[in-house]
Image: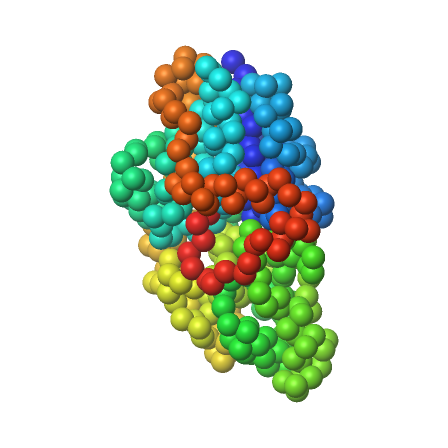
Length: 401
């Protein structure tokens, strides 16, 4: 039978994950899985260029941007067997309620997940997804953490182990001398303006040793991200490079797909981005900076024990030596495992449960917070320019997904 899968995303990182996850179902199974992806209209919806970048390298047709009303109409037209809800926690909850309401007596199975390193399993992250029939985890550590996290809410969704879909198969490449540093920027970390300026100063000092330093941005000015960025690095550099004593051209800023920049001769440097995993999967030198700490608040605690942690001051010498050597056991326990994906089989069984209506009764998907739910709904209805005023920059705590 043909299994109809509809993925619904709300932001750039979730859309990339959703498209790559759907694309991972290829391998001769295209006739079995009919895959569609859309973006729900919210204040953090990706721009046209971000949507285009999300589908690069996949067979997924460019996702349309839809309102909640259009989504309900689409659900009636497609009648999916499985809906993949790839969205931040509050939006995921809102979409789940809409899917259940619009589907009537035959609801699709619901699958959700997070688009990168998802540790720790927070109370909010699991609470907003209490309704999920299945949850995708990307490492053995995540499986245990989310089993415990969902149990605290009294639910036990199926945990589906799969490799992060945008990671290449394990690479055994001969490393080339490092000529370029690609810094993977993030919206939330480091959090303080002074820390972000210090980061740029350190990167520029590294550039002075003869290395080409490129900062890979998640978004350009005016584009939204999954999390609000209080101090964009390109704007900080424009304002501070002269005071720091650096030429403006010492550091370059680029956007677009990460994969276009991960090539031999490049070292990936970050504070905590999951791009480090993409780099490690390709066998490229990878450094997670510890200048601002290695903590859950900075979202880089999973890298403790990886063998890839280093400082800005040591960066030139470390990369001249070929970069750090990651710990093999850490790779296996975390995201570079070689376990066979459980996703295709899980989707088949979820589709059967939907068609047989043996999926559990969710009722109306009770909101985690009634006030928070109404706020999320309001933001999805008002024009983007007004909605953006309702979304204030947040402190860097573990994202709720």
